[in-house]
Length: 356
Ligand SMILES: NC(=O)c1ccc[n+]([C@@H]2O[C@H](COP(=O)([O-])OP(=O)(O)OC[C@H]3O[C@@H](n4cnc5c(N)ncnc54)[C@H](O)[C@@H]3O)[C@@H](O)[C@H]2O)c1
Ligand SMILES: O=C(O)C(=O)C[C@@H](O)[C@H](O)[C@H](O)COP(=O)(O)O
Ligand SMILES: [Zn+2]
Image (cartoon, rainbow, N blue to C red):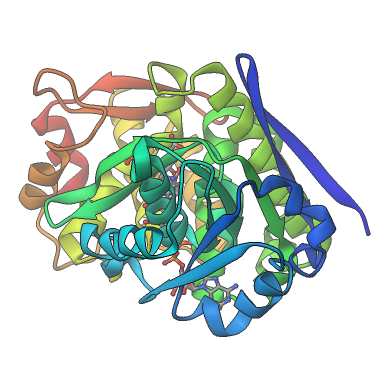
């Protein structure tokens, strides 16, 4: 069975992303990533009954325990992180212990954050089971949890030791969650890879039908794209901020709608549409490019308009806590046309012009 490997090179360190079918059932393909005697698996209440046994079968020889958090964005909280700390304490986990995140982006972000904090940092391994986690959240080391005031406001940069992508786990992923993952795939084409954007336009129907070859290619290209950007700017001091395209609006939408009401990928799809419209309004890209983006997102069955009951003023209020802001100024990723983007200070008036 073939495995695609992508390396994330960070100066003199690196880690490997392995992408393949049925990897969970082949411990020989991932056990080398797990060090120490103690292993804590963090998963959620939907993923555990589906895939935990496959993983646990490969953990013989380790002292392991499992924390199962309730599924969904509402539970990406400090309170759930405390459950992970309690389990690490119960396991007697020392500095050479490993946390394994088995699940979507919620589990990966929360478990990674717990690993970043436990004894000031222990190893963790990402085993993503949603498309979104496979193409984005499992790679790059952004970890954290939400506060009622905003998305991912508490967190740390903490790179995984390895990322194991078993694409067979997508078989059980609901259609809405799958489509949400496609939004982040579109993001890579939009910000940095015009050829990939063109490929997505050609393959949109195959992707909606989840044709395995198209899905595998989308995952591999996305991982490579993210790995390249993170290698050049691990801590978001420059170029990495482009990975936030659509997120200034998107995070505000998720927070205002109530966590889990709009999925992260859905909010990012609407956010990319708004950012593209704002960019065209500011003369940084063309309306033709915006139409191209909206048309692709629609073909991928993603939302592109703000739900009618959401207030522009409240969205702008949430944007004041965006992590890209400096000295009280809202900074957003604007689009410079297919394959190009940049970060720009935006005024309330300009934000209102696309939101109202
Ligand atoms: N760290 C990063 O760089 C980064 C990047 C993008 C997104 N994120 C974060 O990721 C989160 C979104 O991740 P997500 O979309 O994976 O959401 P999620 O983790 O909530 O998973 C979505 C739903 O699918 C279920 N699920 C997971 N795998 C399944 C499977 N194989 N079969 C059936 N059901 C399955 C989960 O239980 C959950 O109900 C957000 O919190 C977002 O902020 C982080
Ligand atoms: O990896 C990054 O960098 C990203 O911005 C990827 C985003 O898709 C992701 O949603 C990330 O969690 C957003 O980070 P934040 O710093 O805006 O909270
Ligand atoms: Zn995102």
